Picture 1 (cartoon, protein in one colour):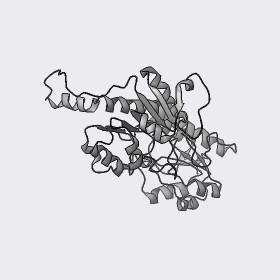
Picture 2 (cartoon, helix red, strand yellow):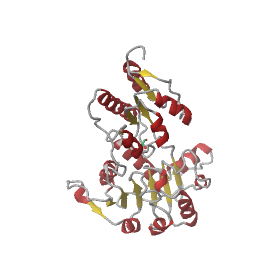
Picture 3 (cartoon, protein in one colour):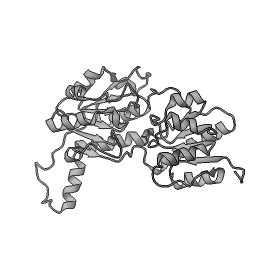
Picture 4 (cartoon, helix red, strand yellow):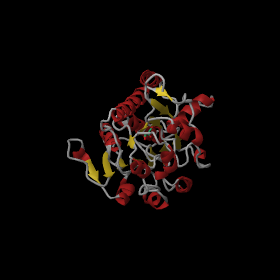
Length: 327
Ligand code: DGY
């Protein structure tokens, strides 16, 4: 490139402070748009760059990786990296990195936002007030379910699962968790009980999912698991949509197998199972887990740190290995 700055591909527009740093230090091989690139544009951009920042909506398959001959690093602007064929990247010696830690609090906060909004019928209340049909306080109006003192079941106890658990202390909740390994001992963890998945599902008033999407966790929650939950329970998902069988969830909501759901992620984003929007006891968000300005700027900084390390011949601080690590 003519100005001597390394050629970088960014698959879509990132927040202004991140774009400003990028423009200072790199030459953009394409001007990013505020929309996901079509596969041919993605491939074209990657093939012109030595480094790239891609997002969770970009499917980076083996063929795309093969065609990006000069590419040294794919910095995924997310903690989850199920959008990238990691085996193909490893075969080609292409470094893949993610953005752990910086989005833990934002995602845990949003998990609680969904949990509280679903339990306390916040969206229904907002709609009622806006509709002009609210006739004033009533003893039986929009009765929700209590949160304080209840049991929270956390499936996946990585960084985000633990951050969700720490917040539960403020609500005096019992915390059960399901994970491959017990969490290391700490004053917080002393109050958390490890559990097999069926027991956790049966005992929890709220079940929240924090596992990465892998072949093992796809449809981890399907009709069988939903049937193991208690009838008054609420399911929260801020991890990845395909962890839940959406059709089975719709059936469980319709039959009263569970009481409600708070969802930030969906099986085929941005398309939803057509019946999901029909349930008043379901709160739906457009994948906002990490969506604070502060977090998204930090995610950009991590991507750039990894890219600069690799281009300088140093190891990437956030290289991801095999899929299956907990977020
Ligand atoms: C992630 O980083 O995996 C989040 O889903 C992004 O919002």
